[in-house]
Image 1 (tube, helix red, strand yellow):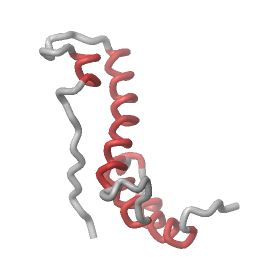
Image 2 (image 1 turned 90 degrees about the vertical axis):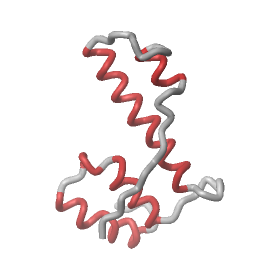
Image 3 (image 1 turned 60 degrees about the vertical axis):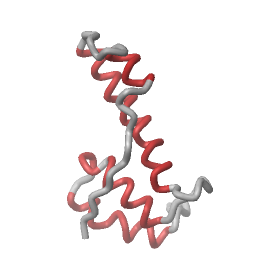
Length: 98
């Protein structure tokens, strides 16, 4: 089952203004774009966690964790890993394996 999850991100906030200017009229280099994408993914992960942590407890369920990973890091997961990820997480419930 595939869910569509919308995770809000403030595209008008100080983060995007840092790179593109308040009026979005700033030109950036390829190196700055690479840094922006790196920083964006890091920051977006925090937004995603907050979106799944509806009660603000600092905890999310294993299903929410898996949904979050599939939503924000899907492009990094192989087909084999996608099939094994949720069962592995549920089986280990966050415990160290090894």
